[in-house]
Amino acid sequence: MESQRQESYPEAITIVHEEFMSAGDRIYQRALSVINKKHDINEDKVRRLSDLGFSQASEVKKGESILEKRKEGKTLVEKIAYYKAKYPLYKFITEKEVVRICGKYGLIYGDVSRYKGFVPDKNLADIERFRIEEDDMAKNLEDWYLESWGALSFGSLLAGSPSAIKEESAKAPRKPRFEIAAPLGDFDTSGMELKNLKLTAKPVPDPVVLCRVKEGYLIVTAWGDEASDPLVQNEINN
Image 1 (tube, helix red, strand yellow):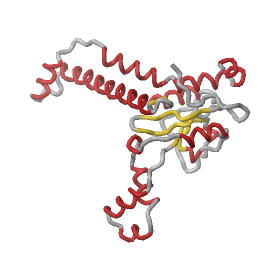
Image 2 (tube, one colour):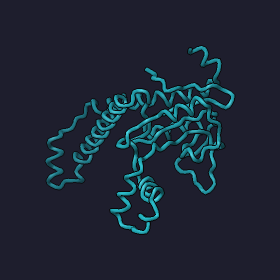
Image 3 (cartoon, helix red, strand yellow):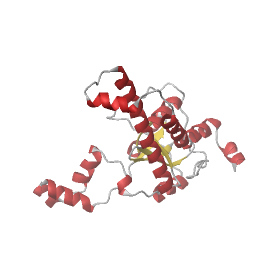
């Protein structure tokens, strides 16, 4: 199987896909190291000083920074473990890691509605099979507008009350929000602007489809260029 992959795919594509698929494990290990790292701080004294208003004291600023990082690490470890147990076929990745990988390999990411490239049939089937519970879907202001106005009946629009909008939007099940990481040339960028990514590396044709969830993404599927067979079929890389 491994030899077939290497024969079918350019090395650059294989490397990028593997970096996406292994990101969750790297993030998990980094978070564990933050949690378990020993620091010479007196947590009890930090809390007591903070309660008394010594917010600028050096011990407090240093201690609170360490405690906050530990808290973030614990939250991330719990979130990764949650998604791994609930969706074992899909790898979790944070948006911060998506940005890092895209910047490294000259890619950008955005909503699939902006993607102009090729989608192999097998990967299309992967996306169609993907299922996620509504409680795990990321929710932002854009989602609220889509739910509140995009699926409303004419009667509810006339009513215009918040309760009517909420009741009507609740009838329409939310759908997974898919995004894709790919070279800039594969996107329709009309009316859009690119932020936080300076593309300097040579892009490689390796789309990766992501589903936005709370705290990050689940990796749904990925493929090579139009002349290649799909490389990743929801595999678990241990």
